Length: 301
Image (cartoon, rainbow, N blue to C red; front, side, top):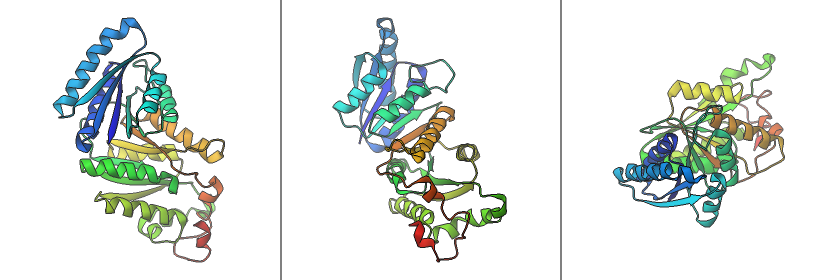
């Protein structure tokens, strides 16, 4: 595994080094620290920060290569990822609307869209990580995120929660909510959603990762943050669709952006590997059928 940790010498960048160092340590990763200066007056601060970052990693038993570049941060990060193949890019970010390092949430999202590897956006300070929340869309394009989450979770001995939010049904179907939030019923159904979540859970279990599935109804962002607060997760994982121009991609993109902008814990964004199904198809059946019947459910596959 190869990890690129980006730093501008700021305090939040040091937090990114600490958390990225946890993953590098547990994964025995080959690690590079990329320091970037935009102005000559910033060089001394950046250099001091990079030396501190290198020592932080050394204290964890991680030997890191140090590379220093001058230029526009996003361009330099993208260029470095084009020159060398990395499995993970780690950046620091502060919440939108505050002043701080150059990797504000808006810039972080630009990096997420511009580079191929998964991007870990470190927000706040975490010294350990044992609980991982994967925001599953319930379709195959999230497979890459589940696989990557399982890989790093297994190395750290962390548990993974697969979390899926279904649209709130009309009032006339409100009695279905409890039925549809019955995880066991869903996982043993023939619905496409149940099959995909069951496959994701079995994949993690086969890797030796402790996992569970949680379901909710309502607005995705609202329910995601309720769940984050409920269990105080150390890491949130979400996907980023590689397809542009469709309604589904637009919605998923906004959800990912909101999580990055509003989260107070590290967020890992993994680009999906295949085109997701249309929005209408993904919701089909939730308001018109239960999980116990096999009739008509093959249409969801």
